[in-house]
Length: 401
Ligand SMILES: [Zn+2]
Image (cartoon, rainbow, N blue to C red):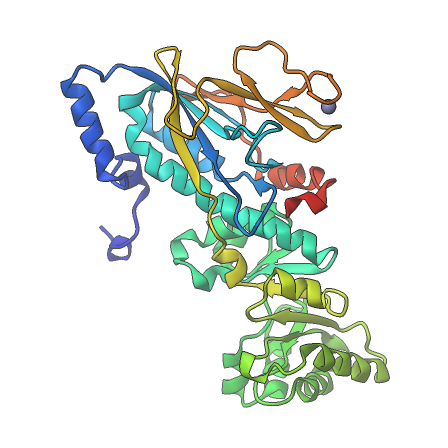
């Protein structure tokens, strides 16, 4: 085994069930000994709340869950809400909405509770923050810069969530390759330091880097931001298309005034076209604070280290009989949605029609069958299509938080 995998699980180890919690292995042992290893259940994924006082979440991670079950070749049925759906965690009556259902012999899939929840909790968490940031930034550019805050093995996972939520760019080369787009970035402080200053660094960047790459100077390494912006402008003139301010906390002062001064100086030089980007410890509230005076934001920790959605996986039916542990709602459920009233309603799965409690029209059934007897029975959406699906639901933006 490659030593780089010493502390990360390989896909094979995940499929073999080695990332499960040990109590599932013991459960399987007991069920087998008691002759209960053929018992069929219906188990659902729900969550009791949404972090950061959110009202809606972005459901992500479904593709990885489906691929896990397909690779494991288990004869189960899986129903789920479409990946990228933006919805509350509870329905009109306060019933927890099932996001995903696994139907089959419990003994077969018990060990996958841990990895499947991991895929959904993490990705839905990042996607939910990313969409909130997208909404906060309005039409300003949003770049995902947070991979350095998480293990490199999951860099594409983080960037996928940011991309589908509507981020404009990502800096990680591998993520960009997988998403079939160009990676976006500026200049690191190290280049400026080794080249001996902002002027030498931007001149070198301009000489060496493909002309199709926009020239965005990092203007805060040794001197005042205004001085370094003007130095960069002097160095490469009309080729300079933007500046990034990554001012450290100890020097931040009044960031708004610093930006206003820079804009004034650029205006004096008839270069109001030069874009201003901010990065460094930004949050949703910093976006709200600066979105009127800058052109874009590089977001790192706040999105990569998003709070996870605490999804749980519970049996709600055993051999056709509704059952639930305390705090859960028993029985097989379908989720109805009325787009005109923006209402979700959990109903008996078998009900032919679900009617909207407000307008009385028939609701759309949200849980679709993706896997039948272990086989994928539909074509999974591309990331571009998931992005479009999220975009199409942004008519009720104020309801995310
Ligand atoms: Zn309705």
